[in-house]
Image (cartoon, rainbow, N blue to C red; front, top):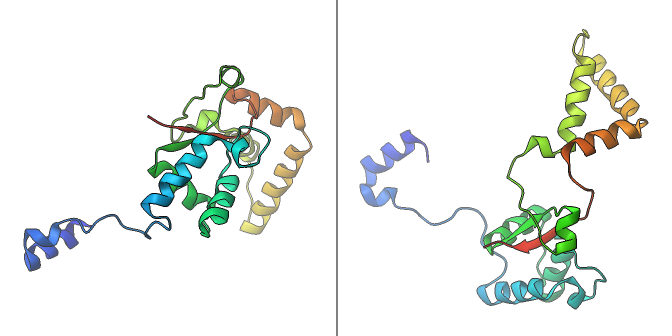
Length: 175
C-alpha cells in the first residue's frame, strides 16, 4: 500500500484500516492435506513416481499435481508453491552430484548466468555503431545473435566462464 493510500485509510478507518488483510494473490489450489501428500511424494523421489532418474523438474511436479489432485499449475506458480512448502530449485555441481549434495544459488547472480555473457558480448559488438531506426537496430541485433549461434566455442566459453555444469535442475528441501 502506498503512503498516500495508508494515510487516507488511517484517516477514514483508524488503525484497524491498516491491519493486514492476509496474503495477496490467488488462493492455493491444494488444501493442507494435499500439500502434505505432495511433500511426501517429493520426499520419496522421482523414481517412486515412475521416472528412471532422481531429478525432479517443475514439469514433472506439475504432472504429479495434475494426476493426483486434478489441478493445473503454471511452472512459475508451481515454483512459488514449492518455495512456500520449503523446496527450492538447485543446480548441483558435478562434485555435489557425486556426494549427493546440492548448493543453493543466490536469487540474482549475473556472473552465474551465461545469458548475461551473451548480452555483454552482443552489446560490446554494437558499442560504436549508429543506426537510424529501430528496425535497423533490430535487424543488426538479430544478425549478431545469428552469428553467435554459429560460434559454439564462444557459447561454450560463456558457459565455462560461469563455472557451472550443464546438469539438469533438481529440487531439494531447504532448512
